[in-house]
Amino acid sequence: MKAFLEPFLPSPRIVLEDGLYRLVEGPRSIGKVRSFHGNFAVLVRAYAYILRCGSDGLRAASERAVLNSNYLRKRLVPTYDMPFEELRKHEFVVSAKRLKDERGITAMDIAKRLLDHGSMAPTVYFPALVEEALMIEPTETETKETLDRFADNILRIAEEDPEVVKASPHNTSVRRVDEVRAAKDLVLSYLQLKRRLAKDLGGMKVKDDGKSCSFCATLIGTDGQ
Image 1: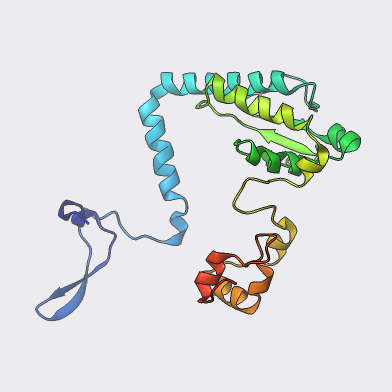
Image 2: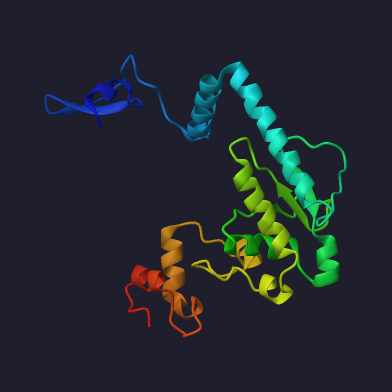
């Protein structure tokens, strides 16, 4: 830490003076840090963005986000069904229900296959009232080039071999995980993970050659074979 930041450290601080420890609270300290401060860093970034943009910049960013969203919407419909037809704002929802009924491709399959094509997967299955929902929010930061690339990828997926799509992702370091098990069988700490892997390293297979995950083996001190 730089010396000039010391006066702003959270308080109280423990200092050693004349062989004794005591608590001090500096007049320029940011104060006490507690868990209820929550997403403080996120709020600081958001506030900095607001100040940097100013009122004109925020309006321009909002207009760009709405334009990007509706441009993508126009490109994806009618390949994907649009449950809400009116003009959308910064995000929109399409449904893959017809693809599921006709070709067996679900919203989750599409999201996983997008990873193979180098695109970030959108939110899936939300809102719950839309079957096979894909919520797409391009934001104001995307260029027309990146919007077209995403649109081309998701449209291409609708025409691909269903078996290839349903088995995706193929090009990522980790293949499709079990989301249901992940939600029900929580591992929330390093120690929990280490105990789990030590108990059942054989279940952590990542390749068809039968070898275990090398990271997992390193973590618990085995040879990974």
